[in-house]
Length: 261
Length: 260
Image (cartoon, rainbow over all chains, first blue to last red; front, side, top):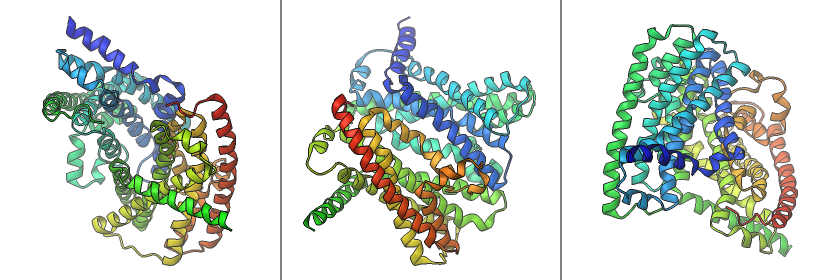
């Protein structure tokens, strides 16, 4: 019961503690405008390169922008504990670490889903992206699974933030590498085999492939394999994040580095 | 004469100080190098998949120019935010020199750090993808890059001046990265964009700076574009000075300078 309270109330309070994100003057430019311009930029770059049509770039980027919350948000939640000097007291509590960190990740799944949904909507309104109405609900499910999977990846980045002083050292390259490796803008077939293999181990890659198929009108059942793979990859990242968080927590205590900023 | 000399000395010292300060930031340098390299790689594979082999140097160069803008944007946005967090914004504004002589060198230093981006993407293209680095007018290319950095520093000043007044204004820097890449034709030719975008691009100095850099690199006449770059940079400095004066007075009235 206590773990459930830590999971729900702790997670919610941690999300609310990202004070800037509560302010429209911060939220709109960061979480809505940035993803919108990213989608527009790559759609026009796609037209210039002549590789694929707008749908390819809208779907890829609209799914990937969930990482604004799933990677940056989760990483900032953990990094923020360090900046505000609450990390050491937090880790001094006997609270279940699983409940503690999962609770901090879950609100960002919702946040990432909202950002992606906004991206799809703007892609529909501003670009040549016209998915069939019947694909909207399956698309929502694919985005939800992808966002959850990406949140596991974000927790891994956040865990590294326990080891390094600045989470952005990893979260910035991670976000932009996803644009290259996850099939967001470059088809995996156009990448060298070893880069494509890395991409297949990252979250979003299979989710984006599934989303593209669903947006073309392919039934959800036909992309179930891709979705399960995406969910499995996400589960692996959550498990890795848990292990890394425990390892880096122990190391942080040993090196007395949890309060360094 | 001595006033001009002391002004130039202040700008030079402040520029160098900020340059050294930014160079010690691992995150800033890492981002200035890694992000443009990722974009260069992305553009390279995208153009290759689209059978545009002639545009590979274009991809490296464009990614480097985009990196200069990213450095300028985050450096300009960060400059005032850092001063706020460190509690030195108030004393700096209260000091005798006009604040523009403190802020402009900071934004110019951020743009200068962008040279890391350009160097990184060009070297990356040469070493990893074997793209020959052949510039038609090398001297004009170097001059165009330097003047583009000056213009970007002036644009950074214009944007950064609003940060004096609004503590949340650095969120703007999260938003402005892609739009300026789009509107200035950093990688996508302006001809592909809707017509209403063109007038916006004409009043942005980086549009002309990037155009001059490309003309110098690939052949063409870079001088008219360079002229526009310098002219617009001068206009930005004038407007920036005016903005800072207004924002400074309002920030003093509202007592928001020390808010973090």
